[in-house]
Structures are given as structure tokens and as C-alpha cells.
Image (tube, rainbow, N blue to C red):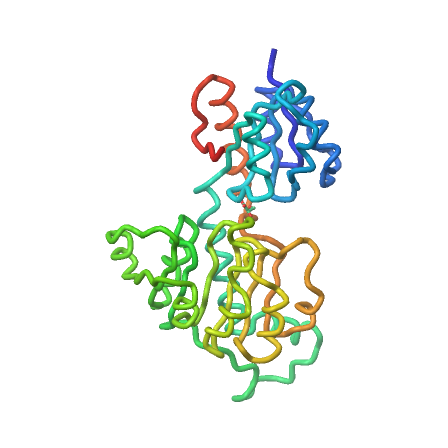
Length: 324
Ligand code: DGY
């Protein structure tokens, strides 16, 4: 008998088709975000639950479940970040959890650079002006932005995506400073001609663009807060393609309003798709709807990577991207 598998959101058609060849699959035809009750029932009905970032697999979704009544053996997450899955419940229920690293690093780094350029060169504002019919033509003092080339690119979290972003920033002649909890090997720092600094505050003081590439979750909630923002240059920018909760958005709004920093580019939001309404009123922030991995090549690769992981699991081997 084929293992029973549920996919919580729509995936690219090719990936859903491949999954259907191999497994007894339930798809989410309406692509609705599933409720806690649906997750709980899925964990009792399917051998594998294939989640993604929009799935709140919080402790409530596992409440009342025990080794006796849980059927699921593996949660195959479509995405690299898994802070939406309560890891201690997964461990209690002996669940394997996998993610999809590597395949989205390049495209997510591209979005970080897009946000940096848009925020610094006022791309969003400029487009709004043109579309609204308010553009009156070129003039020497019109919509002046900040120069990106040659600046300092600060990377918070020097993993795969952080390194891809740094690589791109080097193409703009930027110098790279890094904050990372563990020591980055010296040969890696050398390859980026990068300096690893000892604290987030030190990174904030040095960076013209402070780009966030750490995981989300409780440990990193509000790493960027009023104190860190106050350390930044008034000409500095925050770029967030990591997770919304890494930035205290109330403090960010204050900093953007009061000229504590020059601007921000955000692809992720705490509690998304809800957005702090004050952000919508500010012209010095660029807002994108979580587009980091949104290219067809990447979204397909993510799906195939989930399949690789569950194939390994059900064949009795170690899944390549096991995180729990
Ligand atoms: C991830 O993979 O964690 C992204 O945020 C969704 O692509």
C-alpha cells in the first residue's frame, strides 16, 4: 500500500503529478490555509503531512495527540524556514521533520538585493509617482536616493542565503560585514573579504544596508529592536527577507518616521499576511508579499526536494534534509 500523504497548499502542477505517481495523495484543491482542527485531523489520518510557511503547526495543532493516536511519521516542509512547526511537539510524537534548503538561496538573495535597490533608489515611490500621473519630468533635485555601490553590506546570519546575498553585494563593490552566532570559518570570510563582528549592535553601527538572513522563531524574535535601530546610521537601511518576527515592527515604524534610519525593504511580516498598518503609510519602506522563493524553477525544486526527503524516509533511509 502506498503511504497516505496530504499536501496543505497547492504546489506546482509537475510536482503534484510526481507525488501522485508515488503516493496516495490528498491535495488542497481550493488552496485554503488549513485550520488547527484540520492539522490535528491530518496528523491522525496521513503518514506524511507536507506543510509550508503559512501552516501554523503551533502546540494547539498537536494538543491531545499521543503516540497512540498519531498516524503521521514525517512532516515534509516545503520551505527552508520551519519556525511555524512546534519542534518540541514533533519530538514528543516521534515525528521526523524535513525542510528544503539550498534550492531557494539564490532567489531569496535576489529579492534581498531587489529590496536594497528599491529602498535606496526609491523604486517603489518612483513607480507610484509615474502610475499616478504626478511625474512632472526630470529635474536635478527630483527623488534623490542613496548610492548603493561601494557601501557596507551588513549580513545578520551568514548561512546559505546570507552568503548568496553577500556575493551579489560584492558585485556592487560593497564591503561585507557579518554577524553570526557561531564562528564563520576564516577561509569563508576570506572568500568574501568579510569581517565577522562580535555583536548585532556593532553590525548595525557599521552597515549602510543591514540585511537579515537568520531563522525566525522565539530565539530571534525582535533581534532588530529600538536599541539596534538607534545604533544604525541615519542613512542606513534594514532589509528583511528572513522572517517578520525578527524585526520589532513598532520600533521600525518609529525609526522610519523619525529619521533614525533612512528606509527599509521588507518581504516578510510578523503575522503575515496582516501588516502593521503604519508601514503602509510610509514612503521610505518597500513592501513585498513574501516573494523570496517565488520563481517557477525554485518552487518546483522545493517540491521535488520534499519528495526526495519523504522517498528516503519511506524507503527506510535518512532523509537528506532532516531538521528534527
Ligand atoms: C522559506 O522557505 O522558508 C520561505 O520563506 C518560503 O519560501
